[in-house]
Image: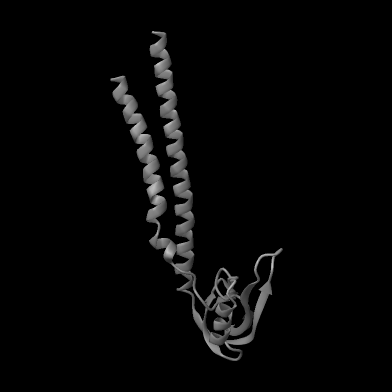
Length: 171
């Protein structure tokens, strides 16, 4: 009888352990799924903002080197536009800003695409008109939501399997 009691406690501990892992997987999947969905929604939303023409006022290459790592570069530009009767200037390239890269030629390519004095379409956030952007973020996060969903499903399956196995042992 003592062995039976010990075996039951071990089985119960195993079920709780598997359920804990399953819940953890589900939480991780849910958090990453939410973050990816939010990123997709933000990228989609900027495509609905009003468009205006803007003129590039300044184009520079910004450079940095952090404690012995390779040099990094990014585009630093300023452009001006009119929105709702007000003149605006900003240096925002995309919603996340201009990316740092180790490849200076990428920045030079962007400088050629946005020379000083050129005009480009800018999408303007109507709630924050000073927040214009020249380039949208990718909507790829929305197309890969299936990946964190696998963690949610896998965690749920792990819980279901652990509880089902316990029920069959009890019968």
